[in-house]
Length: 262
Length: 326
Image (cartoon, each protein chain N blue to C red):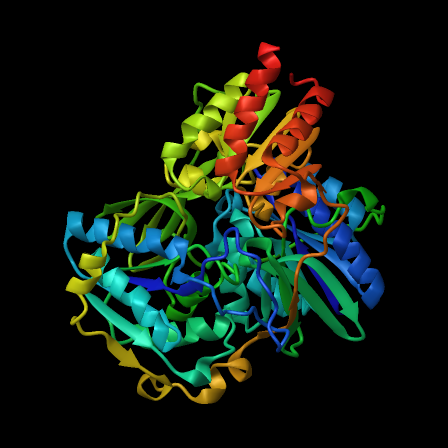
């Protein structure tokens, strides 16, 4: 069972106050910590688990800047066997559709039974690249996958619906699944583990080697562009309780009392 | 005639609320762009649903088939591709739900239609339809521009457009004549799996003390449990905490978990992704504690504390104890 897993490097934004940059179209990246997209981390773990149980090879692939090498190395440390990195400044400004085209071109030369991606990426949150890729490759797909069971020539999966409900499907391979967070408990990757794979080869590709022309990617090859970004309008918002921690705690007690909690 | 197409969504014989929300927005867009609103209803045994939906649109296209009984993106995609080719709508709306997330990208890709996903607002400026969506877990909003095309597709975020303003249009029901040429054995629905029932039902609690990613480690849970206990409540969580298995899935509040309406909801280290807010924004009193003053949770909270929960929880525990002792 050969598996391709697509991953993306994204900024970590939890409890971070984000700022809009000068272009007005993206965020200021200075000072932000980058890492692998959370959903993709679950996808890599799932790919490695399937390989450990059923044999085969895991290839991790990413499209992004040269810094993306760190997430590719991390995937290798987690247990991926091979790595492909597509880096080309001409692909900057690509939307989900254009990125899927790049991935489809890169995947043409790699044999696979299953492709895994995360459901969505922490940054743009489109939930679009994986499924679009499946369509471009002409293979069936399922999104929001919370369990994978490999059977002969098909995969039994569960996918998440609303309100805690799930549905069970069977999908014939080759197929693509977008992995929902929580499907597994990703193993810990130590610095030693990453060092061990420091010399492992990462195949690099650009548009030329993939046979793509510049107008197929970037803004020209995209269906959508981000015109501007802005912080969400704050409505009435919360009344902020300020003061020393004792004063704040006292104010919270008043709220508790008003609510009849204590 | 150019029209706006809305794909209605239903499950187990129940129409999903998002369908009415999209019809409400669709009515508004149809008026603004001087087009007609057409609903599409695919399923099996959906006649009574068609009667309800037709009240709110000019046309409703209905197709019933065993292959459409339960949602499966593959037959749905073939029927919709056919309809889009036939009717040439200028805009297609569907929900950004488990249903639309599976269907919209392949449908749009195969038909060469520009797609914007998970949109919370749609504006009309001149001839252009402009979708707005969120990025970075709700910390930024984005105005998206489509490439010019005869048709655009938008998936709509649940809860974005109130269904209350729906106007009666009383359109006509039209049957779709489409013949399937395969049985889609390569992607088959088997069954629904109901949510697991745990020992605690968070929907019944008066006080919920909820924790999010900011809790950092499961080792920090006991102090939160202590606070919940002192307040006669239980501990709930947002998605990242359930994903890490620090708390069981049935404690998760949000779109894919439970919808709660307690007297008091305290959110510790929860930034407030839309999916979480949808599950708790109707609580009577909401207190949010987060280090980021711009965390979206503060937009639905009544009271906010901008600080580290590791400091706030112990001070609240001490204060409640003091009060109770007095």
